[in-house]
Image 1 (cartoon, rainbow, N blue to C red):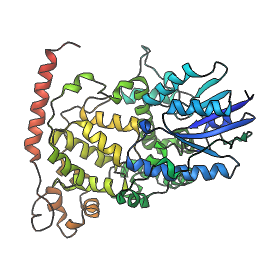
Image 2 (image 1 turned 90 degrees about the horizontal axis):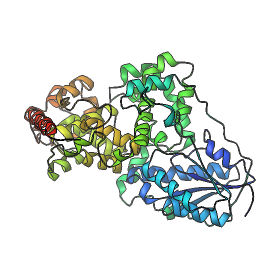
Image 3 (image 1 turned 180 degrees about the vertical axis):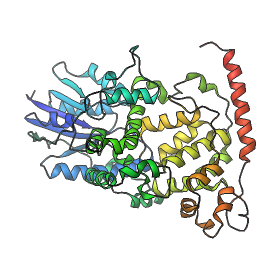
Image 4 (image 1 turned 30 degrees about the vertical axis):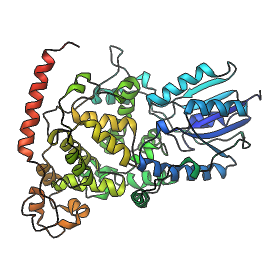
Length: 460
């Protein structure tokens, strides 16, 4: 066995800077640097399109530094084992993930490795190790604000610069990027990517550009037609092209004015924290009793929601933005989620799966957390009886229908007030509302009451 040889496995950390596990692997005499595509750990078509471009740019960045990126495809534990044996490494590094599947794969790998090989997980993707943040009773937080306050008291971690001292092992067989099969054959996926620039360089650039506007975040965050209302860093964060440590480090001199946006960065961290401590949330609600909440299975409603043809303009605008760009403004995400769950009474899992397939910023923890939050069955959830009214939401956050008209061009010449109220739109090629919000709201509340009564008869 070669001495002082290492293997590093990229996962959701496709960057060179602030990647401590990568640095540790490259501190050895020789190193294998690899990305393993495990179909079980992938997002949907949109995030795979992003991943294809991101891996291409990562490979180029490594090549400029004399490092070959080895690409493999298959079950994570199996492929790591193959690479470790073929390269005869004695250390394997990776950045710990909140993903239940990836955690189980590395746990299984421990049992199969030669006892002389050290398997070394590093906390390099999150603000702090999840075990460090607990309540006074030594249990995980389930409510965001006390979690946030507890995290703020911990020492601030600084990003680490990329360091390379190893000789890259490039004799191993590697798939080509195209052989990974990440690109969709559907035209919409390629078209969607025209809106984005993946990669570490562009992630850093996007952060620096948004910091110029971060002071206006609190006042603009809920206005979907404003470009500066959001940083659009979420796909860069979800693929690990930039770390939350790097993001907060850039805000170090402006904490008082950037605190509202900082909370959103930590909100994402909270989702990963919850998935780490409660891995079963990938399969069922955190509040397990909500698995039995009554739902309806209406494929026609679901298809109308997917295509942005519900007759509720703010909902349809959001769903069309998602289809065309692989992204949706956060305020609108909450509106369309509430509509699916509480107006259509569909299973939240249907929405969760559609977002997984169509979001370029798909993130397992955030997606689970967001949909369970909307359904009432997750951590820090909104009360189930809080039902978003599409009309009042549009009137408050898109009063001139600027956002709606941008994504529903058939309503370009309609009166904004009529658009918001979904009235007098018969002359335009736009569908009538497929349901009555007021009636469905009352139905949702009635379902909630029956659900509460059923819980009183059950034991947990």
